Length: 201
Image 1 (cartoon, rainbow, N blue to C red):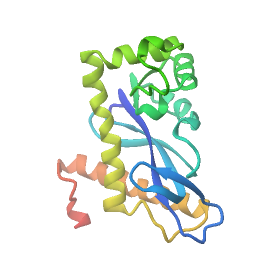
Image 2 (cartoon, rainbow, N blue to C red):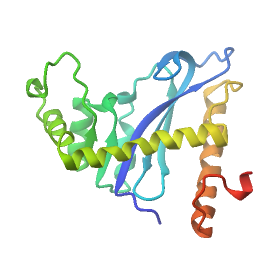
Image 3 (cartoon, rainbow, N blue to C red):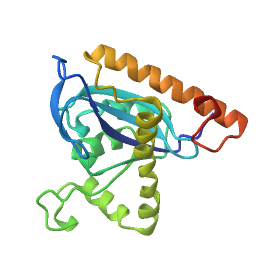
Image 4 (cartoon, one colour):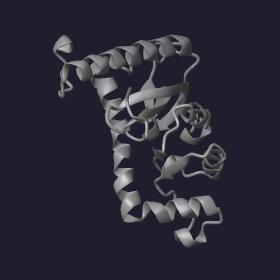
């Protein structure tokens, strides 16, 4: 029964086989240009970092194009959803407002000289809150979803370049997330703090 008061949303690059006809080319923060897919995930980060919902798209789909995650996260009734600058988008703030969700993102200046020139009131209010001491402290929790991706790739082989086909990759992701959730449950039950679970050594 983990707390889902604070949630985060982010995407991570997943390379696929070069023979995968369903995969597309995209650009990742660390990988640069790559061929494959992108895992978009929402996770709770209040106490235990747990994935709540995910969507798998081809690599050419931009992060803010997967707004369905907001509707799915709403079922957990979080207090705030944290996201990076890729989600500083009018449509995301509008959906969040309609769902009575608090969305806090990093600021995407685009071609604006300062936040006072933002024409969208919701984006402007977000920028103001992010620059406040409370907003700045709260936003630091967002890094936990990047740590989650690192754990899933490092310990659970989330990224598998030998796979080809979106359905195969999605099945692989589901098994990885299931294994992670079972390990987190066992870790919590046994009071284990380390990421190096005894059953994974």
